[in-house]
Length: 291
Length: 166
Image 1 (cartoon, rainbow over the protein chains, first blue to last red):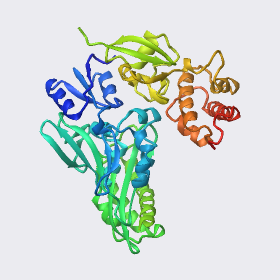
Image 2 (cartoon, one colour; image 1 turned 90 degrees about the horizontal axis):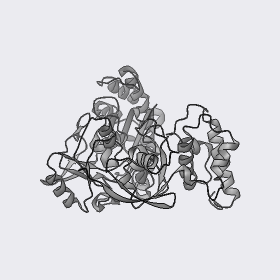
Image 3 (cartoon, each protein chain N blue to C red; image 1 turned 90 degrees about the vertical axis):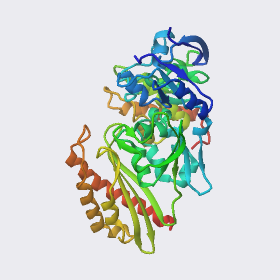
Image 4 (cartoon, each protein chain N blue to C red; image 1 turned 45 degrees about the vertical axis):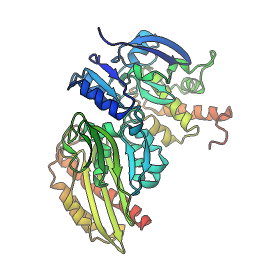
């Protein structure tokens, strides 16, 4: 059974922050509960107060801001993202990703902000958002700040967020002309065994820029700059990517992979190379459509 | 003294006034306090689907859902599927297709399938497979369960409920 706690339901972010301050170090933010309630059940964490963020209007919406960036509230569920026509139009790769996070019950309950703040190394959204150059908006006792998602994850289950800070929203830049963003994973159980995200931009007949991220493989989801470099300059033709993809796969094979129940480190390095191919082709196809 | 909260828990269309501790899960409250033992607690970590119930029509894991969070929402359990002594089309099709052996996963399977069919009354076989991906059955090999859900979808159509939904 979950150890006893008090449940607070603030009506606004400022009230939530005041509630956290009153509770001292003994409070945790609570949204979908798909991770927090599990670790509390297992006795890995104990809090005197859970502060429920699900109802806060500041964390609830999906919108496009003045710069054209996609803004997703921290308490938006995976299922709401999957079903959002705005996300479908602005970032279709995220809809496809969200449709396959864990299982339908987790998607109905779990939130994107909770997923990122829990920082499970096998997070689906973390890897994709890393390639998409997203940033997170935080608000805590010391005021508001923005952090790039590249650098937000410090180690497994640890982020740059301080305990008093709420993840208000995730902001994903608008796709540039000729830009495509895709995510592919291999999954045998609830979480990915390995996942690869690719963002690339085409101009004329060539890929001029590429960012590659890999998840569920190293300690935390990481960008693989050498794989991006291998793709930059390649022809914007899915049938002519053999050598760049082989070079990219070699870069993946250099990573400090961690074996787990889903496979050995060697197997994961192999999968990463395979997934790089499919993610690159998917991103290229979207990029050409947007060119 | 531990904090408790007074709830009016609406389950299968009926309101139950009940006082719970915030830490009590919906699974425990439904089973131990309301006697609705159709849902099962198995993995207790939101992986197996045996505790699937609906909250406002959406499938959730009652093992990882605080009862206090159900306040203001409609909970549906497997006990709420039959109406006036009539099995739901899905319950009947599970019998017709012999879609269970030990029966432990069956309540969760039916609730997952109920949510799936409410959202998509005429699913393809692949959509049914995807819809019950998170519900584990160790007896049947899934084939009769998928058949039963597809058969129920046909029954829904025959009743005219999903006319035009295709």
